[in-house]
Length: 209
Image (cartoon, rainbow, N blue to C red):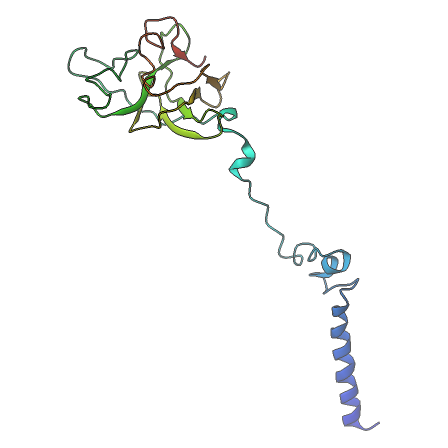
């Protein structure tokens, strides 16, 4: 065989060897697509040894309804001190009284507001916990507020009329959430109003210890 003919034969032989990866075969494409296309449509051990497949993201929906999850402690904020009578933080009183933070009142309009404590004795404020207004199924948080240094919480702005369910939560506490029995509607968003959670009273909002 002449020298040019020998070179052509060698080139074609090499080309056939490279082409053998198209058999979706057992050896694949070296260490890359080898175990994948050969053993079952998996694109190797992660598209080659140097490119592992990323972890699948976790969707929030996988965590379940909002009412079944606690929330981390919120940022510390100092309670507002009123300079007119009654002076001070007014913890335990109804912020949504007419003339105060109800629509048309002297202060900013609150969608809901109240005061929370570390126990039903209502002697120490619950600071940094989250009060959540949810749909009746407890799937979605509609509005939330963080308790301040006096235990007061308020959501500034309007909220839907309801009905809603409400809880207070803070991860790390035992229990880490407490759901209020029943539902609330428009006209019941002042949590400290008489007959609800006013302090002094028989039913303060609490989460603790």
